[in-house]
View 1 (cartoon, rainbow, N blue to C red):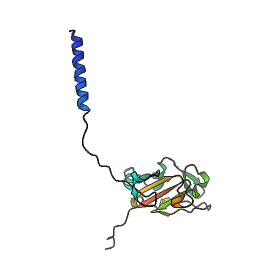
View 2: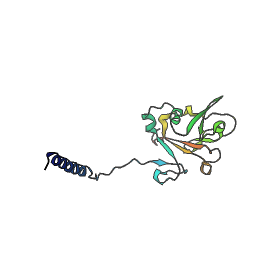
View 3: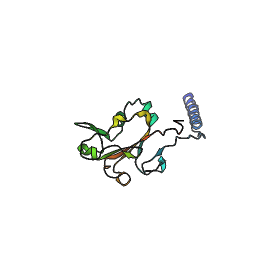
View 4: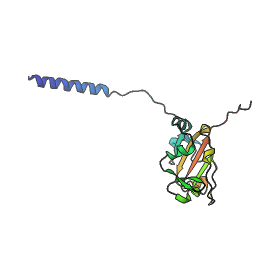
Length: 168
């Protein structure tokens, strides 16, 4: 037998043996962190929610070094800001100059923006990111759950719950 053929067969056998050994499956279970969303008005697991919800955890906001809510929202695909005379409004899904009446911003399920044509600006600067547990972004209409003024989308800011013994 030619020495090159013998070396080739030996290296092919070794390669097949090593490939087979590396293909062994690991039996370790990986536990993922539970994600809870409230896009339906009630808290539920993310895997049982049928709506398209973007959820950002408060610790992720801090890890990325965001200093304002506006800075964090600018990084989300589909969200931009439109400049008005009094400030900047959140624009979702291309609402443009109607963004102040098309995107509802809420804190713990309560609207904080004025949904009229008064050119008011949503007070995003007044929200401290240290108090945010998570931010839920629901692109598109949410009028069934959240009322009018949601054709662009809904941004729900969930705050951290205060401990019951805070004043004890």
